[in-house]
Length: 208
Image (cartoon, rainbow, N blue to C red):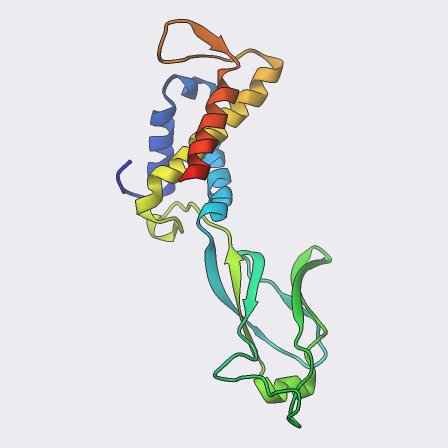
């Protein structure tokens, strides 16, 4: 599909149109079904097209926990102790010791970045109090096109993954009640078609 408006409303309209007859099963108010499909597609999109952002923490000596960015998914790499403020060598008197590793933890329902071991006063003095780092962030489909993080050139790939999500839901629906979709080649209905279509769409998405 050609590049176009990446707002949620336009993407919902195109996803709905692309599902054709199967759209009859998605009737939630305010297009909530299609928004859910697109949100799930955006979440998985990072597996194909990772989104890397730069984060920054203000370090406090011997403090391990810091608030994680709202968009944080996973840690990528640290910029602290890397040129132009390079870490001194082990044989130099100002060597600050082992730099902390970073992991995501949850404290009282709040997501925190845990630095282990906590930064020391000597490390902060040698390397600075600003801890900058790369992290993987989740993709977003926003009501405003400019805030959608997936490129317009990859609109078709996002919609493809949204179609797969719709088929996945139809597949689970079919466990309790039969869903019949016509295969497009004959006039005969085929039970279980959503699972087959889902597999094919995911294969196409993964191969892109």
